[in-house]
Amino acid sequence: MKTLTTTQELKSARHYYRGEKILKPALEVMDAATAELEANAAASRALKPGEVAPDFILPHVDGRSVRLYSELERGPVVLVFYRGGWCPYCNIHLRGFQKLLSEFEAADAQVIAISPQLPDQSLTTQEKDELAFLVLSDVGLHTAHAFGVAFELPKALLNLYVEGGQSSQW
Image (cartoon, rainbow, N blue to C red):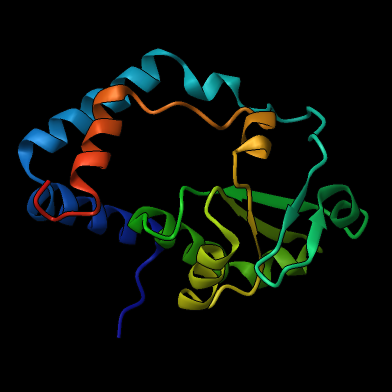
C-alpha cells in the first residue's frame, strides 16, 4: 500500500471537498472569506520568528495542566494550532506531525497541539488519530490571541457554518 505524504493527503482532501462534497454557493462564501482574511492580513499579526513566545498554562486531555515555559526547560517546542477534530484538513496536518514525531524527538524537540475545543473533544482527536504528543485545549482562545493566530470569521462564513453545521449539503 502506498503511503501518501501529508501534502498529497491535503491536496486530495481539497480536491474531494471542492469537487464533490461542498456545493458551489458554499464554496463561493468560503473563498470570499479566505480572500477577506488575506486582505486583512490576519497572518501578519502572528508571532514572528525570534520573538519571545508568551507563556501559557492549558489543560491536557488527561486533566493535568501544561505550562509552556516548563516544557521549554526540557528543550524546543513545536506548537501546532488547529481548529478542531471536526476539521479534516487539521486532522491530516496533525497526522503529518505524528508521522514525523521521531524526527522531532531526535532533535530533542516536542510537538504540542492546541485547539479551542473542550478537553474531551481534544481527547477524541488524540485517540482517533493516535497522536503521541501533547494535545491541549485553549477554550476561549486566550493563548491563540496571545500568539496572534486567532481571528474572527467573516460573518458570511460564520452564518454558513451555523446554518449548515457539518452538512454535506453545503
